[in-house]
Length: 407
Picture (tube, rainbow, N blue to C red):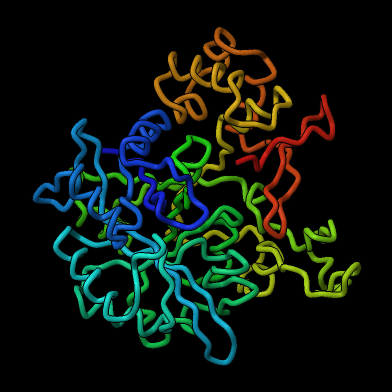
């Protein structure tokens, strides 16, 4: 059984997230995308937890099922903000084997602070304390650093992160079995850190739209769907087949720069020009590409012995947007083209990864077909994102047309 999973998303009760997100909307768009497993996200939030329990039914394998037989598993994201030698901010994904343990996690968190004000609550404890807290609840709870390279909240982030997992988790590092790649990094970049953990990739979707949900995903392969099977795969690597990544350049923190001053620093120029903005003299936001160079133990091209395959894709809405020169991804024209492809090919991943050129030509314009094939062949031309600004697709036939990064 092949399971295409997005296990990092948020409810409408999380800050800066779509207020129209419902379990039904998530399910409908997951099917359109080609996903067949989602995280509940935000399961500790009281109102969202109530909706989960009212609308999903848990089986004896810890998987929650909708009325239309779509599976979810218990998952959430926690923000830790604390100080040791410096200010730290780390986002961690937390997965529970079943609802009973999810409830115990909620009980443990309530003893540490409020969980009702945001779907991704903030706690002042250290990463070491948090892991100890979770493992005291149940040893099978899985904890995974989210978007591990993101400047502000990644475990390796340039602004408030650490130089290694050991530095962050100390004697609890043995409990960290995987890290989530995030949009601005891919496995080839992270292999160079030689952390010896598995790599997973999820979307961190703040809405249910198909250009957000599943923009990154992990493909599992196992005999049957169970929470134990998914957690064991992330822990051991057995059953992890591959990851679906965005192009790192598409992410918001790939290059170093300062968006307020419209300053972008190309790779390796940091060493020549320094880390201060030449316009305002404040510190630049160091991008993932430069941060990798600071931390890397291996040179470019290094492949981890047990590293899993991966593909890089930009969402289909973004490709259509670039081809038409329309920035609003929710426009009627983009949806019309998108839906015509889904009607023929059943879901977005089939379009992006499997549909042949001849089949695609029967449905959409040649310029869209060309972008789909370039995307699949890892040949898209992109202007890299920086300091919170998404990357952009560059079209040779229409230089300067900007499209990526729309909400």
